[in-house]
Every structure is written in C-alpha cells, then in structure tokens.
Length: 125
Image (tube, rainbow, N blue to C red; front, side, top):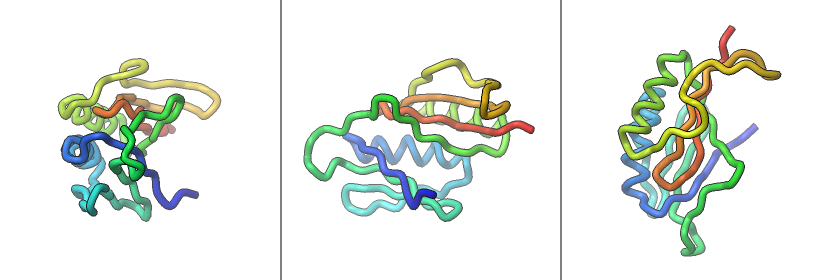
C-alpha cells in the first residue's frame, strides 16, 4: 500500500544515531545519507527521516504513529530498549500484550528524540 514513510527531524545526526540503533534490532542496515535526509530500506519499503524542506522546525504529528512489524515479543522489547537507550522516551502503556478488535498483539510504544510516536507490533496467534 505504501511506497515510503517520511518523518521530520531537527537534528539529522541525532536521528541517524537513534534510528540506526532502533531499526538495527529489526535487521535493517544503517541509513543511507542523502543530503538533508536519511533512508532505510527493508522488505520493499522505505522509511526516511528529513530536515524539513521549507526550513521551518520539524514537529511531531498529533495523533500520528509509525508502526514497525516485529517477529516476536522479544524483538519488540529489544526495539523498545534500543530506542530508550538512544534518546527515545516510553509513551502509552509499558510494552506488553493488548487485545481488541484487531486481535491479540504485543505492542511497545515510544517517542523519538523529536517527539514522533513510534510503535513496535507483533501479531500473536
């Protein structure tokens, strides 16, 4: 459905350090740097972080979340721990199982250093 997801940052070096560690737990190689943007390539998709092209400060989307698929609860926990260790902050409930209309899932939420809300998700059988 999506070709790519791009979010903003106010500090590209800090974002690269954060996302290299975070996405490394999912087996994603370090970012490719292209000027004022960084790109991560995995499973046919692209995740990118960019300094805003208009020169204005980057802001986090109110109500927005970027979700990353995990192969297990342990991988989601490693993702969350790497994020917190590299400047992210826990948000929502602690990592754990949630049940609802979409079924049983293991979720871990955090905010990146720029305030963007992220989620690691493992769908449980």
